[in-house]
Every structure is written in structure tokens, then in C-alpha cells.
Length: 460
Image 1 (spheres, rainbow, N blue to C red):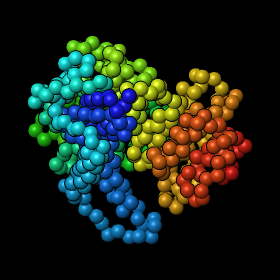
Image 2 (image 1 turned 90 degrees about the vertical axis):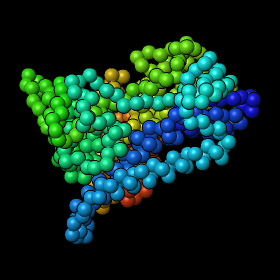
Image 3 (image 1 turned 60 degrees about the vertical axis):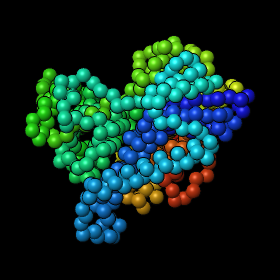
Image 4 (image 1 turned 135 degrees about the vertical axis):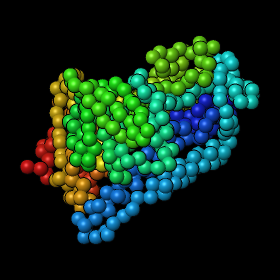
């Protein structure tokens, strides 16, 4: 079937381009339409550029702590232009690589804006060209969210895309929104020497993260010098010459903070506004396209994946959804599995989690929790990164691991072990019994599992 199938993919981000490569590998004739840059949000305005900036901040932190390792640095100077230029270089290298991969697989790439003509045809707005496909995958991604606040469209209020295009480093910033995007930007800025205030509407930063882990991260971010205001509702942003006053309500008090710039980081929302989906009857609800368990919309032969379907908006999940969609489009029968989807925060310390939080797990029944602090880990001590812990949650009756939550060194790499194990329905005993290399920070995962099944070795 595959060698006779034409697949049209709308969107060249991480939901679209891996799907295009997978479909081409399976023998399909693939056309990919992207109105902006290949790689989409992740490579150009999200995952990659933000991590490049955070790495620059990490270098500053290492220099500040160098005397701990017996190295005296006589000072440093932040060249913000060079920091941004390196970020751009990393992004450009990766986007060029995506283009080369697509070319190697003979994927036809069209730059332009796609919209539906009928369930098998899309038109490129800029040229009028019509592309017909036996199957269509919508992977048009998302755009920065906005909230109705007086003055939010002021000249110094920037969304995440605009932040990544800054030409100069602001002296002070108010970050509206304490989710993942907000805390990562805050930590980059504080590392660069900017005065930072985060204002979050909910009681804690990074809502949705296991509360114990979120509280530990909030403590560390505050310790880095970021002022944190939680449980506050922003009412207005007033621009005046070279500064902006952000007014917010905290409890029964109205307070204000002034800064040179205001960053609006209140999440992202699905973006399919230009696709004309209503013309072909594609159902959507609460701003997201609806799909079934095989990633197919209500219109036969039309699939959707990634941020455009809402839910968990993560790059790696978008890729998995896109590949699932094209496999089904090419005749396979595959159900998208959301059991073990990891989430990462690239702050210092890093945070990573997979599966149920403690709060969610308790709703399902009796559980066991094993914790192991990085202060008891030899490699963490060598790295001088001892803040944090590994937390393993398992079902009490059968021992199956329900969730793993990590805050500490290399957490975003360590979580892959938990993802693999949970995908294979491992128990805490099996995780504890797996021999881990020494000395590595991965031993903390083993010890946390041991705390459930028999007791950790390096903990009283």
C-alpha cells in the first residue's frame, strides 16, 4: 500500500518532519508544506534555542563556583551579542540538518501556507499550487498564548518568540507566568545578571509537576536570586518611557513591580487558524483539533499530531504522535500510547518526570514512595550538584512503578531509564535489582527504588 500512497504533511516541525521521514522510509510519496522555518517551534523558538541560552548561563555559574574545584577565575564578561549568536548558530545547524534529511529521503518540501480545498487537497496560499494526497497529516503546531490584561500589547511586553530575538540584555524583567517556559527564561536571565521577578497566578511554580518536586525547584530558583510571587493575578501593564509597571492582586492587596521589560509566558495554544479546517468539516474543540486513538480526525484519511491537538505539548510527544499517524495512514494498526511520556525542565537543578504524581497516584489506591537525596550520591558530590532527589512511586499491591520524579544533576537524561522501564511495566524491585554503574548519578534512581524494596544502601 505504501508505495502507492501520497501523503501530504502540513507543518515541518517536530510533529511533521519525523513523520515525513518515517513515511518516506515506508515507501510513501511525501510532500511537506511549511510556511516558516523547518524544525518548527522546537528547533527555532523553543527547545533548542532556550537550552543554548541556558547553557551560556551554566557556564557563568561554573565560573562563579570554580574555586570549589580549586580553580580561580579572575572575572568574566557577558557578551550578550555573542550569546545570542551562538544560539543562532546551533539553531541554523540543526535546521540545515533537517533539510538535508528530508532531501535525502526525497521528501518534496514546499515553503508556503497550506489550506484545505477538500479532504484530499490543500492549496499553497502564496502560489496557488494545489497538492493532492491520499492521506493528509496536520502538524501545524502552536503559537504563544496571550491573556486579556490591560496594557498587555504594550511595546515592552514580549512573548517567547520575541524574547529569543532580543538584541540586548534587559536590566530587569517581570515574567508573567511561572510555568516551564517562564522559569527557564528567569533562570537564564538571572544567570546573565538581570533582575527578575516571576508572577504566577497559581499557588506554586510549574503547575502540574509533582508538588514535592515543584516546591524544591521553587526554593532553588528563589535561592538563585529570582523574586517569586505566587497566587497573584496580574491586572495591568503600564508603559512609561524606559520602564513598565506591572500591577497585580495578591490576596486582598494590590501591589506593583517595575521593570525594563515584561515577558509573557503563559503557555502555548494550538494553531490551525489558516488551514480552513471548517471547510472540510474537521472537528475541533476548545481550540484543538480532535483525533481518535490512531491520530485520525473525524474526516477519514486526515490525521493530526503534535501541539495542534492540544493536551501535552511536548516536542518528543509530537514526534511520536506524528509517526503513529503516518504508520496508520499507511495501513498499520497502531494505538498511540500515552502511559510513559516524560517531561523535562532545564533549570539548575534540572527537573524530569514521567508517569503519575504522588497526588494522582494516591487517587488510584495504595502506593509506596521511595526517595533518595543526591547528597548521598558520590558522583553528585564530585559535580558539586547535591541539591535534589529521585522519587519513585509504585503500586503497593503489585509493585509496578507508577511514576518517577527527579530534581537534580542530569535529571533530563536520567529520566529515560524510567521511561523505558515504565513502558515495559517494571516493578520497583526490578528497578532496584538492575546493576547501575558506579560512580554515576544514575545510582540515585536505583537507590530510590531500593528504598521501596528492602531499603537503600547509602541512606540511614
